[in-house]
Amino acid sequence: MTAIQLNIPIEVDINDTKRFIAAKLYESGKLSLGHAAEIAGLSKVAFAEILGDYDVCLINYPISEIISDAAKI
View (cartoon, rainbow, N blue to C red):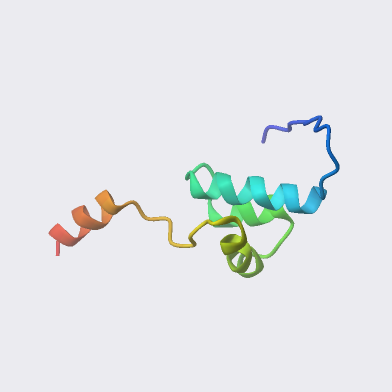
C-alpha cells in the first residue's frame, strides 16, 4: 500500500477526508468495497451506508458490462 501526505491550507476533518477519498477511489474502481471501508476506518456496511453522502453509488457496475452479461443469458 502506498502512503501519501497532503498539505491542505484549510482546516478539514481528517475522517471525512479519508472517507471522501476512499469513496472516490471505490467509485473509480481502484479499490474494492472492503479496501475502501478499511481506509475510511469503517465496516463494509457502514461504508456502504455513507457512499451516498459523497454522491457515490454502491452498485459500481458499468453499463457496458450489464449489456454484455445480459446478452449471455
